[in-house]
Image (tube, rainbow, N blue to C red; front, side, top):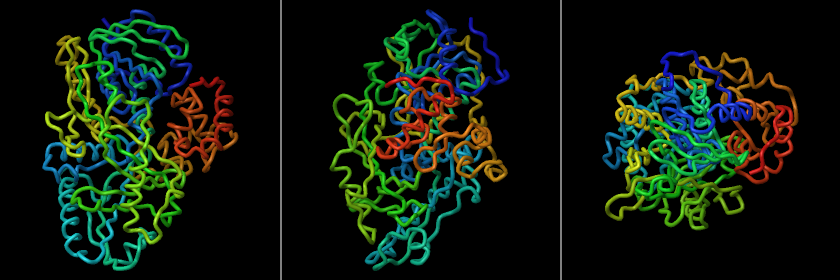
Length: 519
């Protein structure tokens, strides 16, 4: 029986090609583990962390790279549940506020921040809209207070005048502007960085995180795996198998019934929006609860989203925006801009697929609950579906609780992840003490000085340093050039940035003494 030790000394959290090879060799053929997790998005790595932190021998396999699917294509927001209050989903609204609090104050203060959301108010009707939107933000702030998120972390909302509104969002039109409503929510520096941080924390607690390993066949007691790098296959026995593949869950368990929806974002230059560092939040005409918003991001880019379009037919590995979605987002955001954006301003697009639970009737996907569920197949595989990025930790806790309930020989320790800092975590008020450039501190937290100490080399686009690229190979498990550009740095979102950076990424692999794989 596998050894389980609670409170053991954590192992190194670094993920690398060498560690992957060692752990595959140790796993061997017909190895036995406690928990096998299939899927390397935020849900899968969250489950791996929860299981490993409770002392269970845990293996996670992912056929692509960490955060390859939906988890890198979010809005990068850590939602407090305001939208769910509007649809009377009180339970999930409070759950969102609790999980936002945990991320902002305990587990990942280095990867999160408060983001101002500015809704400009125009005549005619500015007073009524301001009162309605302001009331909604006040309700959301009530949730913040209820879960005890300090005001210094997330300030309360309020009305602001025309001058302050223009100062925060310089690109908006001035005619008939009467002011604005400013609310606050949480924002991730980068969603893919959160996935990598959770995966590395799981590895530090003894989990094996194996990318480019495909689960060819799965039962409730194990799986046949294929190492896509070497071509070798191996069998793994597991006392529990958890399907955390999101919108692809039906490929492992045909009993899972989902109704995916596509959320599309545009990528534009932040300079085109006046250099604004707030979320310009624009009501969708005809709707009282849906908005298009701008999201300041890395590399001088701003994302504009978000659509909610049902997806029928086979689920692609990577979703793509439609022309209609691009036009829809531009049309809405242009209602408040002095100089409207055009197709020529769109540097790139990205789209993610939400694994929404199908309803009994034919509801619109925008009306389907974001609540998660844990389903057990006839073969005994547990599938975790639904949910959203903000509540990943709670989803993982519930999944491991379900694993433990099924097997009374497992230790019944409660989940420790509500207070377990992720790699690099540092108290928010003390982040300024870290001896590294602020840009590195925002991305790596307490690990920033170690990143900065790596050898110099060619930099990538937008000031991404040679050290950041090499760290992605040495510590963050990047196996290919695309892993570095698309998921460790996000330069791959804009094709021109990726092309400019490929030589620097290749040089980073050479400095780390690793040959990148072709994908």
